Length: 275
View: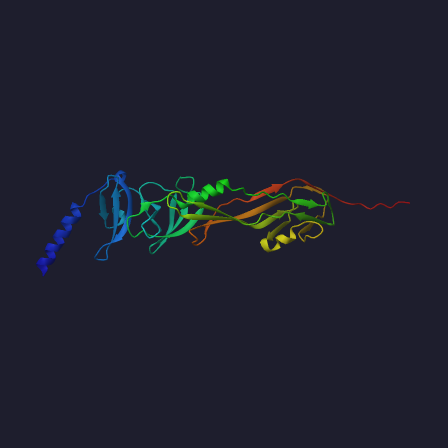
């Protein structure tokens, strides 16, 4: 039995030592597979078409970057030898939390975050879903506030009303010309922020948008205490998220609010005694 074990060990050593090697420039992509003995191995496809099997990622020459592909069971993550825009922020078992960087330079800024399952077989490359999301975002008209203050000149001690109705939620849909996947992108103004210009601020949530209709039916007002020129700022705060093939919604982070600002005059009424 000892002799058989020794022979098996020698054979395995020969196989490992005889395995082809590769340089970082030769590796196209890598993925994990479980062999017949239940051992996890990293398979790497070379640019010329051959494959190299490694016992762990540390044996692979050069850096590896997370990428998005399809192994026949749906969208999943694997490794590429070139930077893809996706960066890993944590692995939970076979799931990887990936952020997307549209600038194409490692280190951010990051816009999207999603959990992806690990590819269980060799993937084929698909276009990054967020490329489609970015295409929709670039063509979307992010409405800017166009508020109306009443009265047109503020009066100290009396309320100033504001009308600033945000747009209704919008879902834009795009179909991938490569995979046929349907990507929905949702745009919603979640809150309206009003900086009145004198240090006061009002945050209006969506359930109170009905009060942003101005004088006389609105209920969003502010009372100025001193006579001055102020610079109020009104902002629409956006939530953008996407989903693929009616799946779970994924957030798009880093979307800037759209804003409006304009000088506003506040006067004081002074009573005079006549007669």
